Image: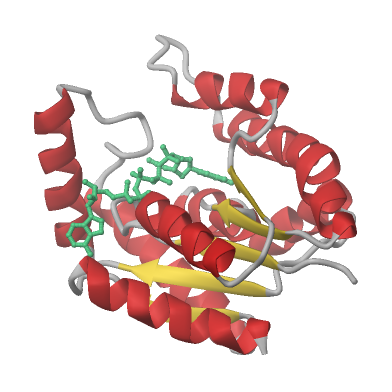
Length: 211
Ligand code: Z5A
């Protein structure tokens, strides 16, 4: 039987990495074999592309180039990691996927969302998550968490993290619109709550797929 495919989406600092790990541990405790991956990334080539899109270069990629880099990374991880895992019957938990392209490059950067969906279909060959968990946080919370993390690690924010306030508002609205258009696939969780409550809400949602 084909495995299940769960993606986490939302603005930066919403807790995706935290809950991808927590959910994967919980699924293992329920007897599932779990593959955790992320976007961009998850294969050698896709991780190299991740380095490129996050690099603070003097001549950063123009938006069309940025789109193609994210899509190229996705083509790799879908065909080398996600599809094989699902075919084995494993559960795949992925930190970001197609909806990030629609939200960031579509709603955020202003590229036509339908055009992005068409390109994305080519890249994924129509692969859709069984469930997408949108961890929603307002930009203020996102900023506070990233500032705390940067202070703790002395890391600077990357090119996308430091895009302006309006960009972050547009992409949050974009995520809401995507969720509204596909209410069966999306589960929207208020991720400004304490971690334990967010984890409990994630487990409640995923129990539906376990049933
Ligand atoms: N991108 C794109 O533009 N187009 C695409 O198609 C794709 C991606 C696929 C990936 O960066 C970037 O690529 C991203 C979108 C773009 N843009 N940016 N910037 P990334 O993977 O490095 O970054 P991210 O996905 O935005 O994740 P993040 O910044 O690491 O945040 P997170 O994973 O959602 O959160 P976290 O690391 O789990 O938590 C952040 C901090 O908050 C940490 O200290 C936690 O302990 C804390 N935290 C988490 N939850 C809570 C709660 N509930 N309360 C208190 N504190 C919390």
